Amino acid sequence: MLKNKMWQLLALTTVILEIFLSPVYAIELDENTRTVTLEESGNTVLLTPEQVKRGKRLFNNSCAQCHNGGITKTNPNIGLELESLSLATPPRDNLNALIDYMKNPTSYDGANSIAELHPSIKSAEIFPKMRNLTDEDLFAIAGHILIQPKIVAEKWGGGKIYY
Image (cartoon, rainbow, N blue to C red; front, side):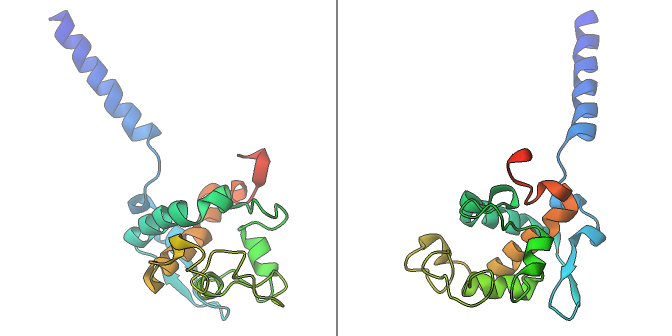
């Protein structure tokens, strides 16, 4: 009898811990969190939970080697936080601009193509991870980049002090 009660208590404790200490999943993100800027004019779009999950998976597979946590390992002064994205030329703080960048990347000032240095669709023969990415994949990755500041706040792009 005592052994049975102990197992019940352990099961109840496990369930309670699962509820209160589990990570946030895409399905749990509210609409405000999943709403991101679509284009420079300010139009927005609501990402589906599936797009959020897919974007995270694709980002982790294709981008996180150099951009883990929203930083840029090759240039720590420029991260993927909204401030850095908005100060680029052209601004890259919306879905369409990030998709354009992933297709044909340019320097931060927009003056030079860096496709041979940065993974992109244009340089897919050099960067194999980019070969099979579709426009839908790029949309999901860009969405992931834009919702991260809403989820992890200043940690996204914050660099070594957080990671």
